[in-house]
Image (tube, rainbow, N blue to C red; front, side, top):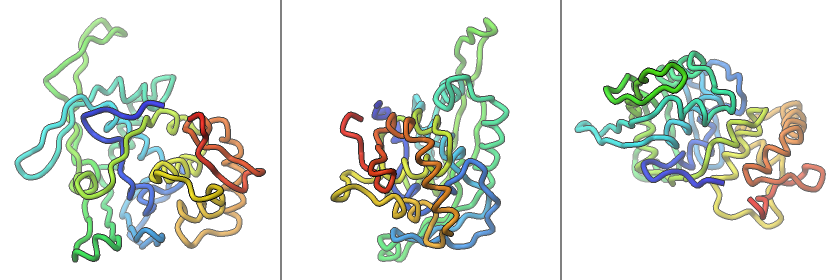
Length: 254
C-alpha cells in the first residue's frame, strides 16, 4: 500500500480517534453535542461523515505544493482530477465533491483531549476555509483544453491538528472504496495505531471506539455485519477479520 506523499500527511490520529467524522456515509446534522471516547471528546456543528473524510484525505494525499500563509494558515495546490481518481475508479462526480466541500466549509469542530487540556488548550475551528481556482493549469485529455488546479486553504482546526497531532501517511484509495462508512471508520481508527494489541482488537471494542461510548446493541449488530461485507476491501487496507469477525488484526501481507 502506498504510504502518502512528501508534501502533507494523509491524516492525523485524533481525526479518527475522537469521532470527528460520523461512522457512516450518510451523516446526520449534528448540533454540537459532545461525543466521548477514551481519547478525548469532540463536538461538531454541521454534517461530517466518512465521505467527507475521503475528500479531506484525498486533498492531502494528492497535494503537489504547500504554502504557509502569513496568518498561520496553510494553502495546498491540488489537481482536482487526481482527487476524483483517488476517490473512485470511475471518476467521482465533481458536483458531489463540491457538495462535500460545502459541508466541510460550514462545519465547526471542537476537540478536547487530555494532552490539550493539560496545556489549558483545545482545538476550535473549521477544516476547509476555501477552494478556489489556481492560475496554474494542466492539459485536459477529455476536452483537449486546459483545466485549472485548485488552491485549497485549510481551516485552522486542521492546521492545528497537523501541527500538534500524530501525522499519518497512507493511501486513502482503498478506504474510499469500502462499501460501508463504519468499515471506513474502523479502518481509519486501526491505522492510528502503530502496533496491534495482543491477539488483535475485539470487534465490538473498535465499533464502540468509532461510534463513541453510547452505541446501541442494534448498531453493534449492524456494524459486525457490515464489517463482514467489507472483509475483502479491508484486506486491501491491510486489516483482517478473524475468528468469525469477533476480532480484527492487521494483515501480515498488507
